[in-house]
Image (cartoon, rainbow, N blue to C red; front, side):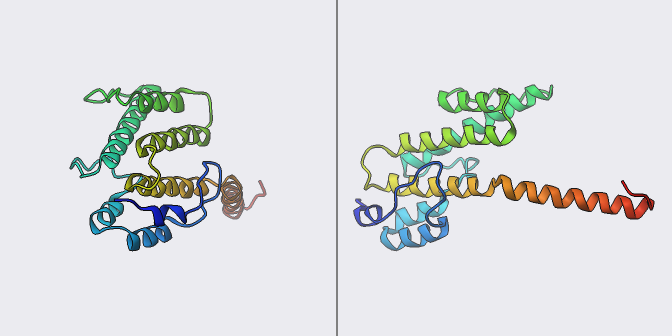
Length: 186
């Protein structure tokens, strides 16, 4: 089924931009223009649904789930190795290879945790583009649009200014509490 009317009215998404709408607003719009089967599948899409082993009727969703699962398992393996912890009971999948390579790159590089998350999110974005295919007016692109919005929302949550402000506030509370309990000024 073609979703020309839905996809034609949406703004183009770029990895480094702010989300032009919320994922909930998009889902509301998309559901109203999709058939029931696709609208039901739309509700199952998440950045965190890789543990559900049941196959869907959508190759895009199944490919995304397999890719995300490989990414997370490989990232866990590399983090465990860095912390000198026991390896997993089973070896994580090396296919899709780009998921395994992205996980290794993000975890084993000298970048800070936020930069590592950006490496992973950029790899997710590229995988979504690959799985969506070239026909822009299909359900695959409608599903891809939601995943990209979720990634943009996730990136918005990684606001460095807000994080520093919260850190500073917590630090001031700790100092104040220490001063009050000891009677001395630190």
